Length: 184
Image 1: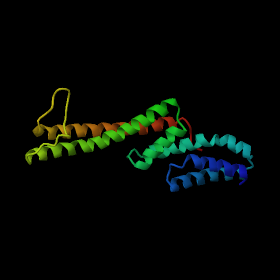
Image 2: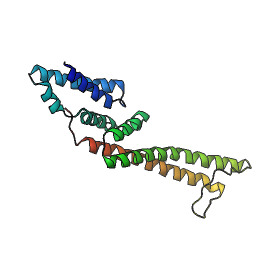
Image 3: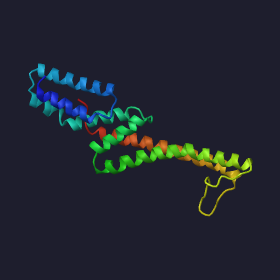
Image 4: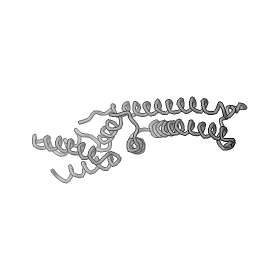
């Protein structure tokens, strides 16, 4: 393989840094295999690069595919989403993708923390002291500590559910933008 093709592969690898080592190596092996096959069939380096396209765009397709293959949340995938939006997507992605992915995480975390606060408020009330920093206020209405537990559980479940919905929308958006290009 010549120096131009090695440089091409290095550029792709640079854009895939947010992926796991094994995923990145597999992708590079696949692309290298295609390059070697084309070279063995007499296709010139320039024609191969033209056929494969811009290394950044090719990496975008693979990154989008890797992110969208499984809709479960992981911190590595969350980092890959930011790498994708910083490197690849247009103006809508630069604004929308970080917003919905970050909001989804915040809502899921809040959905876990809110019932914990309700439990602390409820237990504190039964032990004879009031935890002033933990309150639920809805406009002018502040429920009694007795009702704070069931209300916090309902709010927590709703927040967590909405966070999961936003996470799935994030994955669907990534699938939509990465399907514009095809893998090699």
